[in-house]
Image (cartoon, protein in one colour):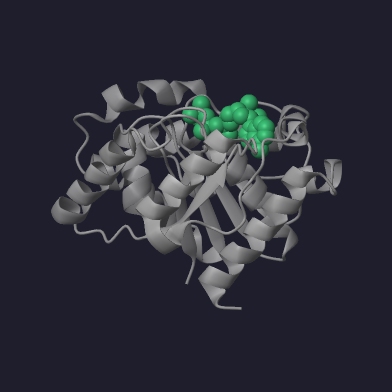
Length: 255
Ligand SMILES: Nc1ncnc2c1ncn2[C@@H]1O[C@H](COP(=O)(O)OP(=O)(O)OP(=O)(O)O)[C@@H](O)[C@H]1O
Ligand SMILES: [Mg+2]
């Protein structure tokens, strides 16, 4: 069965995109067939993987114009087995355009049903809000991954995310299990350590052992449209993300 992970945190800048992209590369390099779905109008993961934002058809066309999911998928030029369902700035109007559409919360799930059998893992990168695209991402997924930055107030806002997930579980009959929590931007300071222990306490056994450090190579790879594991394979960021990929595979496949 295809595992569909929604990477979500309504807070901005907590490494949703970076984690989606590096998990995408890592799982594809482990031989898995991977699709990264970019539901954020900022299109950061689309750009990070493809280096251009000139796709004729994007997720916008699938969600609002009846295009087929299979027709928008683009394969990464540098990484075998890694595909992108690209976003575009048009998606910023999706909340309005989809507001009165029947079955609006299920559009992404229906679209992914057309292609999911071609993939082992689908990663959905979401915008920093809990609008219609994030709700679609929740309904389309099998599991949720929550990236959290180990900076001040990391847990503020989490209650809104958790309440929204609970409301969807109750009203839309989805189970929305939390597959794991990725702690990121560890500065090796007292503050990071304190926030990490608060996050571990809040999420009990769900936080991955691999904590991602703040590391300039992660940002450079992202900005240079490079795969971190090729760009700086011995960097602390690459090593931590490799361990995370292993943990994800272990949790998902039990080996
Ligand atoms: N481990 C890291 N070390 C240093 N910089 C990082 C690391 N991870 C991510 N970054 C940088 O932090 C910034 C925010 O990351 P990212 O864009 O992934 O967050 P996001 O949650 O997707 O943001 P948004 O809410 O805007 O979509 C980016 O500039 C990214 O390059
Ligand atoms: Mg992002």
